[in-house]
Length: 192
Image (cartoon, one colour):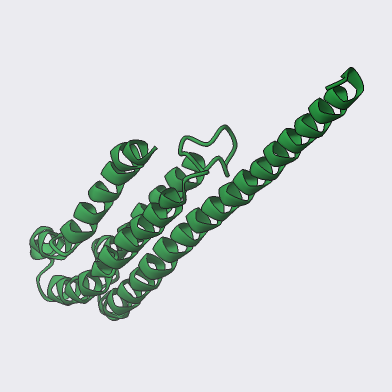
């Protein structure tokens, strides 16, 4: 084989390797974008479900709070505390969303998760579902808060006990949030 043919063969081979490498880089970029899209979906699911549940719980408790404070304005602070309790589920969803967005490199900085792995996007969606669905406890918390506000209207000294009753459904959301944190901190790194 003469030098000219060898040079052409090397040139063609190098070109093919570069082209294959470029195509692979584009696929990786597409997969990274897909994983980031899944993270955005996870955040949307967590915030939407928990947000709707919190808004429902706040509304139910707010009706009772408005009625009690109309008759006894001095109970406004106690009623407000009880009414605000169902909002915490959305705070858990917000923190989860921020951590997921940071992990995917969407809030600045380098991605902490391997965006080229499709399992990361799927895990993020399930994490969002976990926080969103356990956030549905805000509805029941609002119902219990409403009863506590009504009871406080009749006997203001039971507000502390009413708060304890209203906090009980929130433990479900706390458990969901803690598991989501474990998934994000440990699970997503293990998949890496």
